[in-house]
Length: 278
Image (cartoon, rainbow, N blue to C red):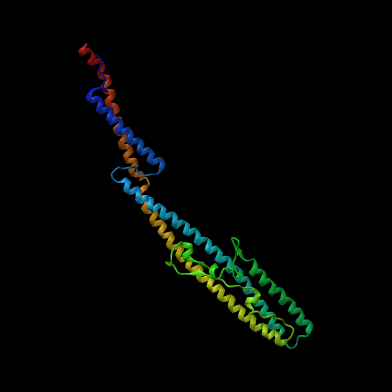
């Protein structure tokens, strides 16, 4: 007659205890390895559903944050181009001021006029060449339907205000279609006034870009805060609580050791039991 400590009601109970403790320990190890919270049939279906929704929302917010970062870079590039134009327009105004002097002769004005043309060509070069991601910024493409709005960056419908529309900053647009020259004191005086108006246009353009950048910064701060809050909520529902997992692991290990000790003790009693019934 074969008597085993793992047979009968007592043995079955020990087997069940070993299986439970082993399964619990495996679950704890999996939770620690994966970073996912220990499962609980009574609560995890709803918790994981909410966590999934939060994760999807965070993914969308991160995309919007990326869009804002690109828009900020675009606006900074545009402002850099306008800043160069502003410096050139100031030089143009200085040349026009010099050419207004009645002391200058025709050769002097011709030399100043050549510098004036070269600087004007630089404005057109900046207007045509300033771009971001293949999109021209200062030639008028970023105006009207081409304007960049916060609503489009955030994939919202009118929840945010602010847009970046930049008109053409070519020399023809800045000078109102006028062909400027410094061939005489009168034409130089006219050029001085026209370039003064162009400076005001450039300053207005930079103010528009600066306002948009400020709106982008505010929106980015708001989105970053929302990402942090929703990530924290998702983490509470889904991520492993390492203190809890460590405690659960210690408890499962203890239970398994106790079950194994009982089984070992039962096996040591088997020879004595065999003698009693032999």
